[in-house]
Image 1 (spheres, rainbow, N blue to C red):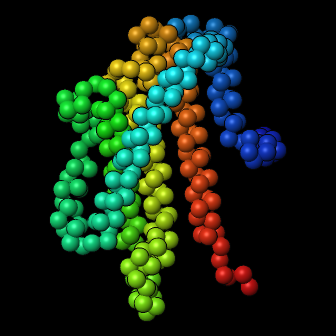
Image 2: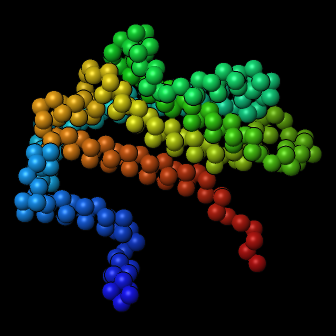
Image 3: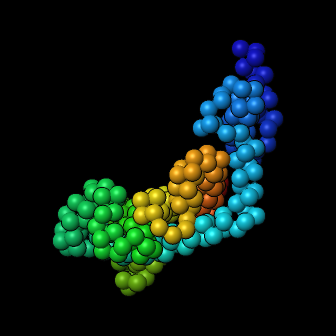
Length: 267
């Protein structure tokens, strides 16, 4: 019990911003020790130093930036197209009961189909180039935005709409001043999920539609040549980009929805 308290006190001395790095540092330390001390001689486990050297080489040669820019370009286009369409469809389903009865059954059927089941059809329609990959990424962005937009609009309290009627708000005023703020948390959840799914879908599209440049193609090159250091470096890049995108959206949400933290109950 005393040793547990000592460990807890040591952990509490670590600054809050650095506590999230404790586990990754421990993993790398164990990884390095396993390789350096001969606990593992498998070629599937290369040293962290080899991965670092491979990463330095990728950065110095410019290969990383070419691959990363290609992947982010596809992701950005797919995200914009898919999330924009998702917002429009979700708003129609959430705002209009008639549209929900007409379109809802078809949408709820399509969302049950695995995303990767569309790959053969997309490759036949668009080939193996960027058009097919962007379409695949757009589909990944579409469904979570539709669902969360729909849920956000339907969760707006009826009392809010009654107040809008009392003040004789127009349709635009009701949407902009009542509905949008009330549904904003759910909308941001949909956008956040969409951003995560589009990054994962970008890698999946590059891996399955293996043509051109991209981080997914970097992983394929590492696998085909059995360069485990390149594969691990690609995995690290994928994780860091996903973390950065999530942190960026979280910061935007915190700034744009700062009003949620305010309350009139101050006394």
